[in-house]
Length: 419
Ligand SMILES: [Zn+2]
Image 1: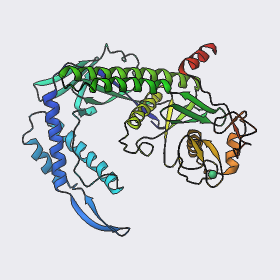
Image 2 (image 1 turned 135 degrees about the vertical axis):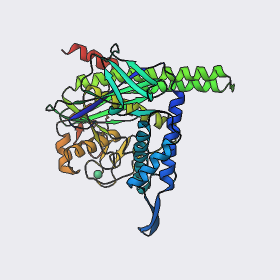
Image 3 (image 1 turned 90 degrees about the vertical axis):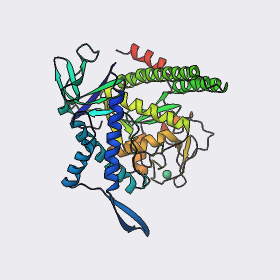
Image 4 (image 1 turned 90 degrees about the horizontal axis):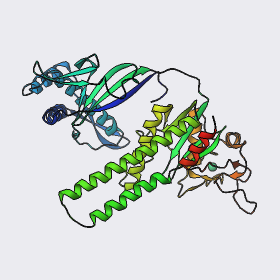
């Protein structure tokens, strides 16, 4: 999703094949591949920063791989190429585990495959006249998907890539070269439960109201609580809960769809910068339910924005904690960010945005730079309150634009007025 010259798009098609058995067999195959490699890992003891650590060495020799393949083929009844896929996938899972383990993010525990899906590489299916054919068992069983009538058919461009098959859907990816275009600049975005905050020195501070989104989640949370308090474990209860989840998801997605379209239209030509969720920080494996919701909403926002405009992922490290004026790292509490060193008082999200913007430009915070970034603004203080002579806010000389506290509807009406 970065400014690379390739972009990948994926589309889902629902299917009616019963592939449960196949997917379960594949999951087991993949797990056995992981088990076997795991068993053969050698652990080298090393002392790092006065701590003894075990460094895993994953076996990679061709001989090992050949034996692994034969072992897995032993009781595999489907096409042999799935064994090769499973081996590749097992290695990539273990490599990613190793990377995270060395950074202290994972325990020394064997990865377990839970999700049931199969990745089908480009070379392992055939495609002709709008029909995709995937072999399951050699010469006898295959799945055919006619996608020539799918809604996305006319929109797709580029070459078809990997397929992902699960119980209900086939996901088809397309890879295509992206046109490089000059951008007007970068708007960086920070998200919390109540608002999406954007910043660019020319535009100022943009605030998109997310209370409606918050409200949707709240409504369904209450609905679920009411149901669960009846303490019944009937099948019907589960179905109702599932129905609620589905509706909640649909309403959320609908909202985010409209919102991202609006943002992409309103700031056409800009590159949109978002924190890279994979470089977790913002929502570090949180048990907090609301945070996890915000995280999944944030993912959806980034995903949909990347369809509608150019998106650049940014490193979230310290963006909420560093002072965007002097660079001091503080531990902010609440909505107002206060710097212990230089005394800056600023809206917490705006501070994060300015930091992300500095990252985009490859700059470090400095008071001089900060003045430059905010000098065109007037009327409102950095904390979002209206300028007031009686306030003892120390940075009165810097005034931020009125954050545009607009609801979706207001935004949409503005857009329709402007050609
Ligand atoms: Zn400071």
